[in-house]
Image (cartoon, rainbow, N blue to C red):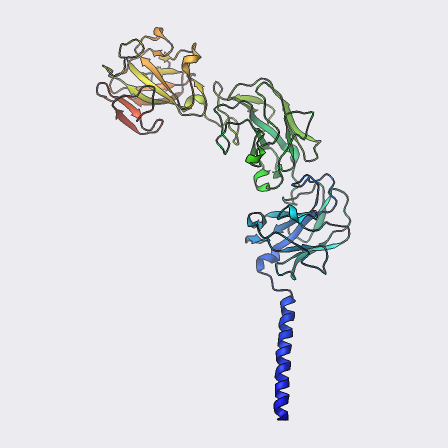
Length: 489
């Protein structure tokens, strides 16, 4: 009986011991997934007076994380603490993975402003001098990385250089959300092209024809424009701040472009300026650094032509040119200046009739041959001064009249019928040729040497036309009835 009692007491002791051991194990640090061994505190700023405005323009302390692994990591649900006796002091929000997920090689800025109620990336702490702070795994007990805040000068951060290494350096300027290895060179940002009167040109994501300003990075380092300002009044350099909450949208790599919509509709997105709309009558444009004082680039412009942009030729240079109908090339928002199509090259031969007995009477009721042009562009184009020919050895055979732009200007998506009756003296749209069977004919640029479009007449039956279906496509079909000046169906 005594032996049995001893055995029972021993068993109870073992159960209690195991239970205590399990409880202790649950509070101990865990072995991290491998990717988290490469997740580090990469940079921080504890005295932010004017260096980085933050999403609320209040210049908060901040901590930057860097994912040096080759895996995507969601830091939502992890903790940051400046009290190592309370590792669960401030949890990174776990309700917005689109904000907290870090791809390999990416950066994430946590805002140490003591206001977690302001958003997922806002922490319930501020950085003080000479204090230890840590990034803690989601178990609330395993420290992923930690650092001492030191005693930094105002507006100077401390960061790993290169990113993720054990070498720490003071950084001025700081680089929140970008690489510590390359200090962004903001001096190479330029206003590269703008359009102040947009009726038929580029549209924003809502399909609206808005004024726009293109910024070009002529430097060799990637730059985030978040926190910088755009103005249309150089006496007020902080008119409209570019938001700081999505560097993936506001960052420009070397040789790249950022298109800003000057529409006073910031609710439509980060790239829509909140208090800038360009005047077609002339005004100013300025790009100001995040300090709100340093002008990075500016210009003053005069009265503008609708749907004609003004830009540097070439990108980043000191030479300016106009782009649009009547100029060498069209506007190129978000692309290299001068690389757009010529306005003339997007005018197509869309339909023609070479045997017109009773199908279309024409302006003089004489049933002439005719050629229909189609404007496949998003801009109005004046075809006056271009040529039509049925002799490819003589590209300047018949010029479309250049003295009546009210007749020869084609709106986007519109049609223009040229009367091929060999009587150009009758009007701007009458050309000095008639169409024969099986002959090549062409539309020629106003330079008299560049064929813009051409086709062969083939042998078309009386009162039937040949046209592109749908308009502007490469598919040609016989049409009956014909559709001069209207969509081909």
